[in-house]
Length: 306
Image (cartoon, rainbow, N blue to C red):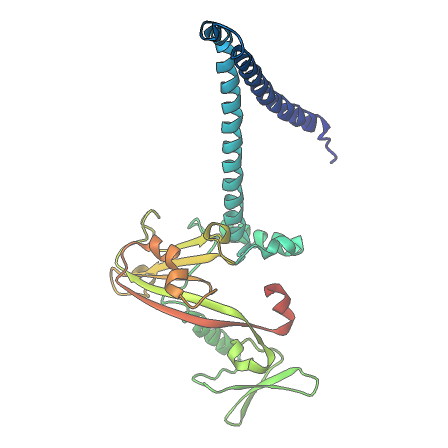
């Protein structure tokens, strides 16, 4: 559906000219008064004559100063609103698109739209008011659930295999995973990058703080499950910062304890400093552990991180 914006644009331009004109008129009035006062310096009885034009022009002076201040105030408020809008937009899109930074602004829109669609569908699927779900007993339940599912469908699974090797054929296609002479044949492999060091590249480091606390995160409605995203623009860094908290209600901590994770892309080797803004949101911390791990990706995704 086509829609014209000419009339609205003309109103906007007219408003700008009106406000700027008021400012200029106010300034000219003050200049004229100043020139008149300077002329009085060259005549006799200047003290007596000086107060007369000031008295006559006092309303103009007050009005002119008021117009100038109004424009200055409006300009300041407009600038503040624009900055708030930018930060709010950054926070909202980081949440809706699950993006670590603002790189999505330079990428094709379809991927961003699909991420937002996934967020909306996830939010509508559950009754808890959140698009996220978290397994009881922690993320270790996920591989265990896959093992159960594999058994149900007659699949093969091997546990406690710490030195597995992914094998490829002459064309570079994966055909199986080998451990101590045993081969589990497959067409696809989902694994940690550490299993494919010769096929991945380092793209950065992730700084993480693991915090044990004895209370919910302040100002979050005493929720036992919280995710907070601190946009990179507010932090003045290259990537967003993530804060996640779960608790004893998820069977991941002792009674009355909460576990919070604060993470971001590491830019220096001073993890405490880089993560401080997120850690400060937690309130008193019982114990804290810092960790950093290498972020690796296949070569075809390197362009996204440069």
